[in-house]
Length: 88
Image 1 (cartoon, rainbow, N blue to C red):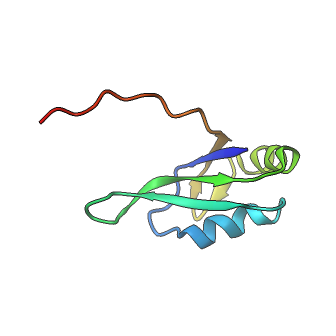
Image 2: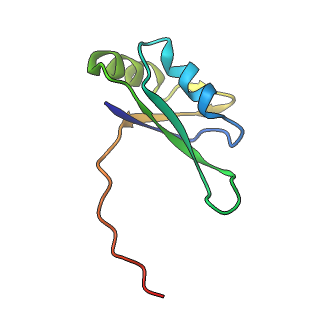
């Protein structure tokens, strides 16, 4: 299951995000989304957990929890919508 994690502190790394979720089970990947030009975190990320039951436990435990003074938003990620191609 792919999990969306929002309202992260800008200093959170991929490894820290993985550690946060690994206490609930296996984490296949954890990615903090960064601005492609500045490299600065955008304050959200995605975690992939292969076992749905573990992912659901992580969502239930971490949604609305406090992390580094911020209240996290954690839920199942929605599929990425198609965006129209940019015209220059």
